[in-house]
Length: 52
Image (cartoon, rainbow, N blue to C red; front, side):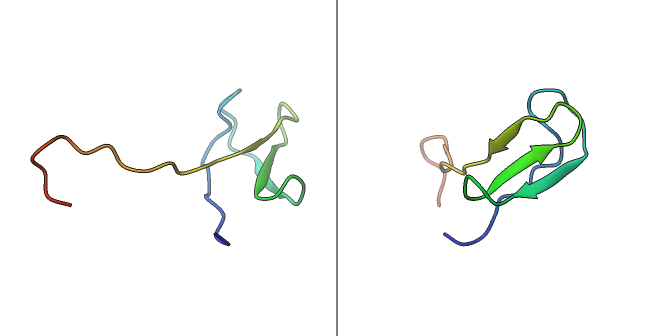
């Protein structure tokens, strides 16, 4: 997958000043708390009986 999931806020401190980070691949840097994190889409969890 080549596209990067775009977060709107830091999952640790809630700040919105996020910048792409090259390493590790597809990571984000929070300019406020200085944490580097990644976002991964796992899938959908649909209730039974719902058409896909």
